[in-house]
Length: 79
Image 1 (cartoon, rainbow, N blue to C red):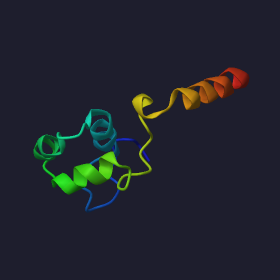
Image 2 (image 1 turned 120 degrees about the horizontal axis):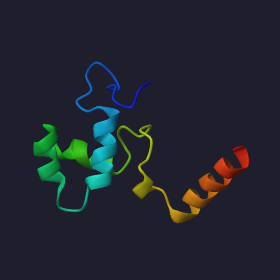
Image 3 (image 1 turned 30 degrees about the vertical axis):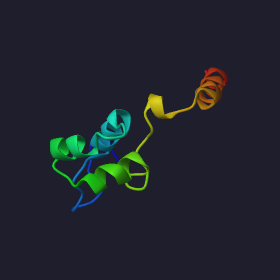
């Protein structure tokens, strides 16, 4: 499935939008993001906390330094 496809026929957000929300979310910005994307604040909170759209690939910011190093090592060995 492409990153821009919605998760189902009733989905309000695309996977790409969910990734953007996770990258931009900070405490207190839920209502601003909800208005921007046209969804409820609770939807923004579920996306930001990984309870909704949880299979969206994580952004680089979401990965820990340790995990980034592990992935980089795997990629170097595969090359």
